[in-house]
Length: 134
Image (cartoon, rainbow, N blue to C red; front, top):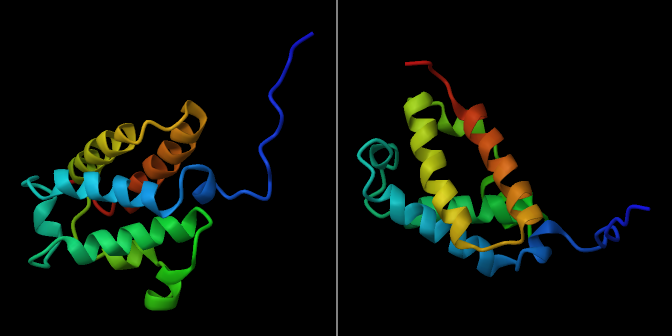
């Protein structure tokens, strides 16, 4: 007889299960700490300060994972590909983004199933953003 774990509580969102806003703040702050010094990615953020970009990503991820819908209230539908269309996002940019995001995810020390769920989404999103093969 094989024992299986009890199903997760369907009333708890992934956002809540991983620790809420604090977790996503840590994730995004760690990610942008890497982006700040990345010669390939930094030019994709035209603002002097990475703070506004970090805030947008944090709010987007919070909303996506079941937290407050502040992102949509402030910016409308995410339209991720459209918002990134002005930038060249090729395999090198995708891989750099994934490298910094992988590091950020690992710093959260989430349980394996939560880390896998988060990482699977981030990896798919990164591949979706590619708009050139150069």
